[in-house]
Image (cartoon, rainbow, N blue to C red; front, side, top):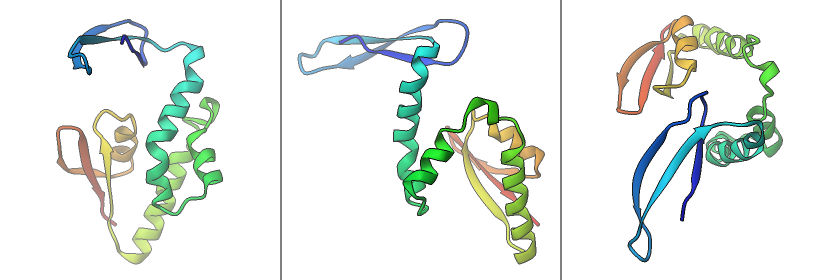
Length: 133
C-alpha cells in the first residue's frame, strides 16, 4: 500500500506516517502539490466530508451541490461577506448573538474577524467565535 495524498502549495513535502495493515507492515504517505487533474477528486472528497453536515441543516442535494461547487472565479467576490452581514442584520434585529466554530487554519477566520467576530475559546483544531449585536 502506497497511497498518495495531496496538499495545496507549490512545494512538495514528504512525511512518513506509520500505518499498520493486516500483515502488520509499515506504509508511508507522500504529499505533493495539487495539479489541475486533482481538482475533480478533491471536490468529490470535500463534498463527501461536508455533505452530511449540510443535510443536517435541511439543505436539499441541489443546494448542497451548488454551495460546494462554487467556482474559483466566484470566490473572493464578497458573497460570504454579504451573507454574514445579512445574518448579522437578522441577529441584531432579534438582539441575538451569532456563534460559530471554524477550523483554526481556515482562511475564513480573517473574514469573521473583519466582520466583528471574536474568538471566545479554542481547541487544538478549532476556534469558537462570537459576534454580539
